[in-house]
Image 1 (tube, rainbow, N blue to C red):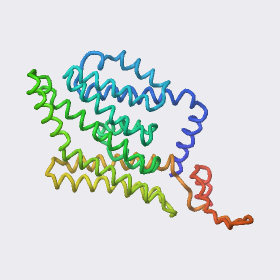
Image 2 (tube, rainbow, N blue to C red):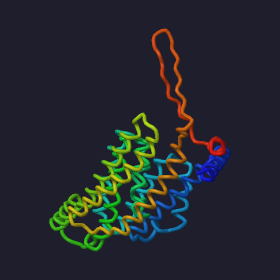
Image 3 (cartoon, one colour):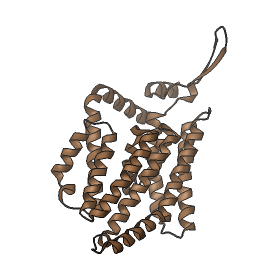
Image 4 (cartoon, helix red, strand yellow):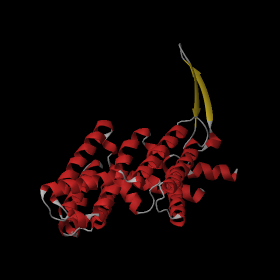
Amino acid sequence: MTPLLQYRDTLENIYRKYDYWLIPLCKAIVSLIIFFMVGSHLGSAGLVRNPLVLLAAALLCSFLPWTGITVFAAMFMLGGLYKISLEFTAVTLVIFLIAALLQTTFQAKHAILIVLVPLAFILHIPYVIPVAAGLSLGFISIIPTTIGVMMYYYLTYAAANASTLTKAGDMTEMAAQYADIFLSFFNNHAMIVAALAFILAILVVYVISSLQINYAWEIAASAGLITAFAVELAGFQYIKAAFHPVNALGSLLISAFILVLYVLTFHGADYQRTERVKFEDDDYFYYVKAVPKLKASEHDTGTKS
């Protein structure tokens, strides 16, 4: 444990010293990965896959708030869909505007989750996002993560039906075609199961992490991870969808490792050094439980003693 804490403290010191440069760099790297993911997932060509365009957009996003990455990702997705179908692009734009209105109504600054969820799915670590969001952002993160799940399945569905969408036809045939497409999309049981798993995981994490107990964050992360996995497993069995236990188990283990590092970095507490303080004023008695953050120096000292 001590070496991990030492690495964490070293990284924290580096971040505090060079945060002016590291934050834009992180934004640029995340942006570039997401933009490349959108283009490759849609199988698009042209500007959407042009390295110079992707790099220029990523550099621009490095100077913008994190929400700007979501906006640019939506633009790249619309550009990729334009190669498939102009009409489908127009319908997608309307869906994006509705999603943006819904997200802005609740918490606009959490919109980065909308693009991080599809990225986590593609990297086969989807369980990381709902657990981390539940720990750090609370139950309000349900909105952007659910939208993110829909965006991932929307990307997948658009890529899978590209040949159908490009077929020409009259207005009546086109209207019937799009009605069938969107009806099939919103009846996607796998998407509903994934969204339900994320929602329940966030609620479980938020409730447990709010409890005044030792190791609340560690317990919450474990419970949320198990909840997401169990709901997906049961849901896919119920709808008789394809489910690969070996891949799912590997994804679960990798997600667990990442979440251990996440909890250690942002929510690590040294419960062995908990202090309880009592003080009062003219109107109240105050009973305070103070739990120090986990530091490498104190942990090493405690171990040696």
